[in-house]
Image (cartoon, rainbow, N blue to C red; front, side, top):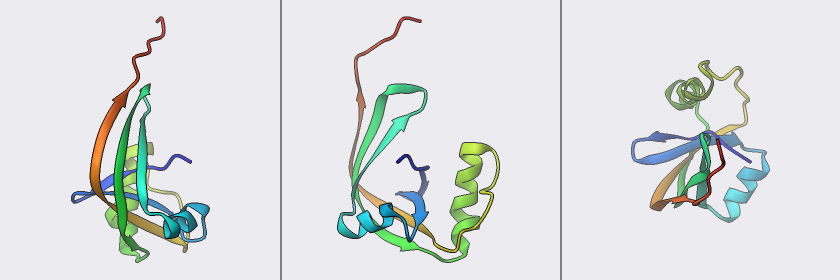
Length: 105
């Protein structure tokens, strides 16, 4: 499932619900993240790293989630689920992959 991402310092940040399958999967395996380019479906960043910190404190909304929502939608996130968890990924390696396909215009 696609997720919004941003950076917090030198870490990649995303959020999910503590009750989600994503959160349960992170308990078992904290590696890897793929980021698709919305403007070019054949370009993606592949990031390998680990979730090294999770936060559920109220400050995540003001500090990270609302600004991230503004980046993607132009508006703050519309509600505050109590089960929201911010995940911070420490990047170990990253690369961009571009497939050599083109569509006639």
